[in-house]
Length: 313
Image (cartoon, rainbow, N blue to C red; front, side, top):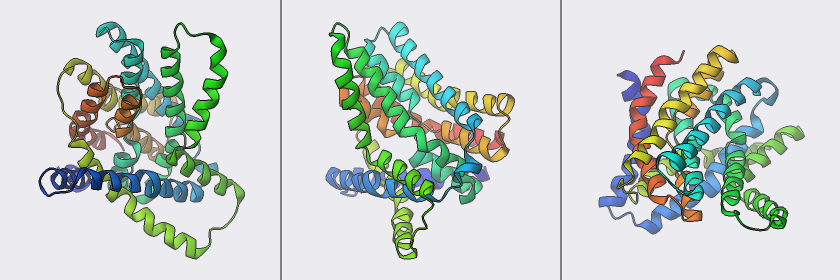
């Protein structure tokens, strides 16, 4: 019970504060959007830059860490796609969007604060190592999969231009810019000036609280209505199967250290992120399923995260 009260609920209470403020205290949709814009386009990319720029890549990079997490993620995408396509008779495009929701865990807004509260700031190195590939890899994969699903019947000659457009779109993502800039700075061997580091740290401290509060306001817009079987499938894959695969691979196949296993499983155990809905909204496919999966999965993950915190060393 201590884990639930001291580690998990404070994070979800901040989300709840944002929900209450948007629902009853006059925190307008424009204010929610502005706060999320600040968090996702500036503060969180600064956090990614700062963390990856300072991490010891040589000691933290582990093939087993990546494989444990990403094998689990792509397994869930595959099962989500197959389930949507053949169990629920969805179109290929809708099936890709639903699979993306099972793929894209909320590694930043939930994974980082919960891991930090449970194990301390020094335990986040593995999280940031995974996150370095998270958005670039998943967005690349999701966009390519969706465009392939949409390109049925089109002439094959358009695909080169399509890939160039995809790469251009991905490289403009603020989260990707933060990751790539942090990697470049880390590999350069440069030292960050104290005045810049101090200012950056002030922005970074605001990133997670602002993002969590804004997430509460965003969740107000989602409605858990219809398509409950598909929504339950996405939530089950995301908060149950993905961390179970990661834990099994990390412990019995790749022999991860306790710290690496904690980071990998806690990152995998998070509910679908808001980006799952944004991806569906971008293409106009499975928006109701993905929006509801974000809302219901976030609520359900309170209990599943509690369970994983008891299982992990």
